[in-house]
Image (cartoon, rainbow, N blue to C red; front, side, top):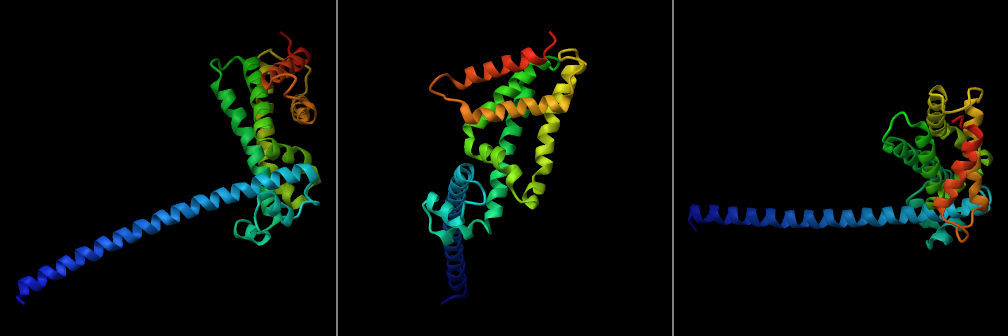
Length: 230
């Protein structure tokens, strides 16, 4: 065999090897993607089940075995995704409050007139209620359980809760300074009243009687008649 022929065979073998490796790597990457997608779906299934049970039974009465059963999984499989019930609770709390916060922020930003604070308040009420009922278990678990949770869990979520409260306080204060709210209103109690009223709708709202949009309009009218000065 000539050296030229030998070199050609080596080059062909090298190219063939590279082709095989590339294919194998591609197959592995695809398998990895499929595994990640399956893992993400399973993780979300666990969170959905946990949020539902936390809302219905409370944090203390809900066990990881209960969550696994609700999710249709073996009890031990939860530990592939979460280290503890506390970690699941953390993510449920974070998901619920972050969804509300981002929705209200987007609603305020979408208002055409930066000086139309009444429109911003009304848009915020609509957004808060919409998330409350579309992300119900996550938000409801947050509302119902937060003060019952161990202090260590509460402390991990203080910042996000404070940021959401501050967003409303800023909106209400700007509206007051612009003359849209009564001068003697105290901002923090007003915000607490608004959010408390909205959050409590999960206990009595019946969508068979009227739409979520109708509920939002009623809430806006009730709140507005009490605090709007014009």
